Length: 420
Image 1 (cartoon, rainbow, N blue to C red):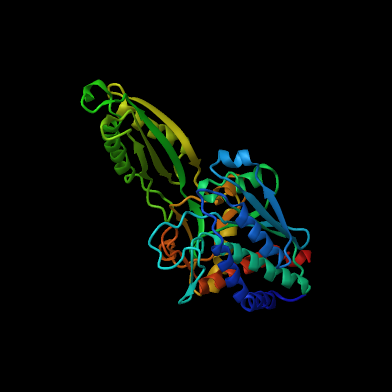
Image 2: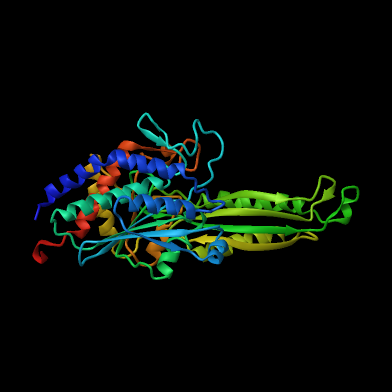
């Protein structure tokens, strides 16, 4: 049996030798659009499956029923699972998502170009999180090659490649877990910088509809103006937003709850009193908060602001409730292992942090599975231009992250000396 040091060297050598192929694979993934919305992501899943099968990995395709996908804002979803068994032992799942936000304007090249410039690969999804399709796949391939050399690994590595993180994850990891397709012992979920993420915010989306009464603009007194009603509601929402800054989170990397009105739509025509106005609110929930209490409070703010408005009715509908990601039992030791391996490869301390975003990692942690977020990326999401023009990933960090994941898997799948 090879010792631990030579095993690490073997993993790194495999990753270095195949790194050009890894970069080419990432470029292929970026070049295939998988924007969400509209969420028609089955074609990208098929491309991914074929690329992995060309690497001698067995890929399970799990299409989500169309009705369930549409219920959650998706047109088509096929989840991919790869299972590589090395013997009896823990099951470690590596989860990344292939759906991406639409590219928007401001790119200096094609958002689907997969172009390499000055050591960075550019394109939508390059950082969030098609890069980690390759980080996890090539770490697994390295481990598979090591296992073939006679190293006594024990356990199973799974790839969970999913396609609805941008719309809440219920047809991705939520579907995999609810259908009993997998029940891993540990999960590494995609990240966007070289930190180890152990907590993140939750998110509440509410849709508010203000209903008034239309009237001719020459006789506005005969109507009830929904747009004017919004002029009362919006200041109340922003006053509430400002008070949220007085509730600091105790989680490093997360400041305090936030609130944004991200969408407003209403009116019939310029010469008509608006009978309806719809707005959508994004309320980020810090790990210390109770989501149900957050929603109740926000509903009360809306109802109080609109109660005295004559002729105006208010409807409030929950669009999304994503709970915060907080450590499950056993996650601390797992995070410490990941930090040690990352620090060794990066050559500097890597410590656990929280982030103000929300991701699919919460779904595994909610199921009681020790979960951490780690993957390819620069120092911060801002450097990666995540969800912005010129999204990019540094190739050196892509290589290093792949080594870190491979080394972590080696640790998790190597039995203690006394059981060998």
